[in-house]
Length: 100
Image (cartoon, rainbow, N blue to C red; front, side):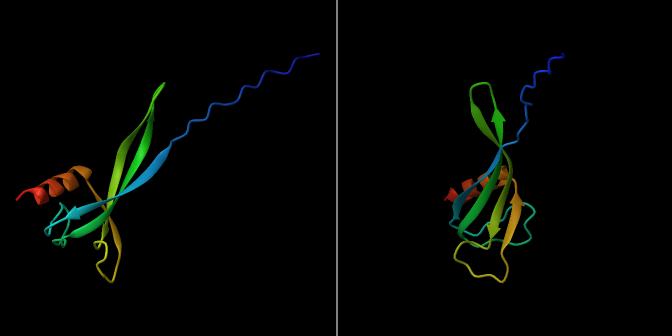
């Protein structure tokens, strides 16, 4: 009689991802690269898409995309948009906004 081969559970590769949401504040009108128009001052929701970087004993997240929601929170508009942005461009615009 033959012995059945041992079946070990298959290792499944999983891609773990998440989206985190923050709110950024602009005190003055601003423009990001690739934006056609100046955006008014206000609070804006920003979504950051991240993927897990798994190590032997740690877990970290790498940003792979970011989107800003237009128009600003509390502003009325005929349409709502989620526009892809470069996080570095957003950081530079926020830094410029903080300068006197």
